[in-house]
Length: 334
Image (cartoon, rainbow, N blue to C red; front, side, top):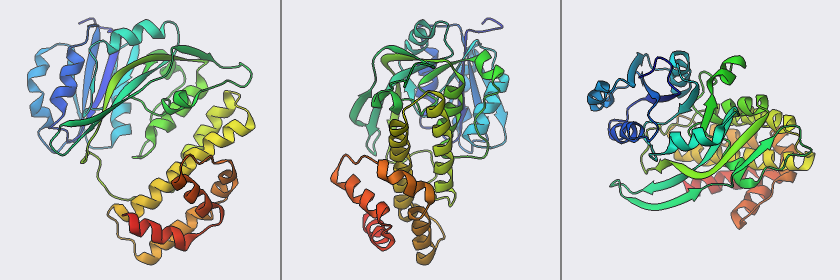
């Protein structure tokens, strides 16, 4: 392997013994071979490391071990160790197409950031795929500074993830771009909002190269965190900065932000009852009240564009601050 590989693939590892072998194998079977694979052991408690011991014979594979600090911390650790000209972040419970690195390099050319599509593969409890959906957009290059840059809804939908992008390493270094520490929710969009605010162009590739696996039981711990809505407000602030830099019209920007924050409110409201927590019924009620009365939520709700009957119901709930109704709805749906 070259001392300076073309691409550094950074893969944090934490309690993924059932999935990591397929993930690593999909990287090692790439048609483009000039890469290093950095496996970041983030204090895993299962046999994830043992499952991949045989891969260490491949000189492109490196194990790095650290205390548990979460996904963002593991990715930042990998960035500090990476030697590649380009950076690719991959999750250890998914897998990639054999030509992902090759196609990504062909498309990124002289630019700083490439965005590509993915396959959303849904599995049942037995690990069998029961549904797949391709999420892509057309090949294009969007440049900053164009009057009222026109992102499509599909393009915007692809911007939030780290695993469907190739980044120029020097660009990340020059702008001191890292994942936010101590955050276990919306960390990808917070990172990418910084990235996209700094870059002058975004390249889109129309191929679905990544397989995101949607499982009934995931590696995420299903615990509700009281700061969840605060993180979505932080996401709103980061998105607002990105959209402003890219010269979105005021109404288009408000619509994107409203749709995003409403998604966050619904996530928090539903998971307040679905995920384990120590909050009393009164505390849950007050949490819902806090979200509905939030000034930013009330500012944006008029721009929210409901697509379904359920969407319209939630808009009415937020618009009129119907806390009791939302409390009853969440209890019923849990």
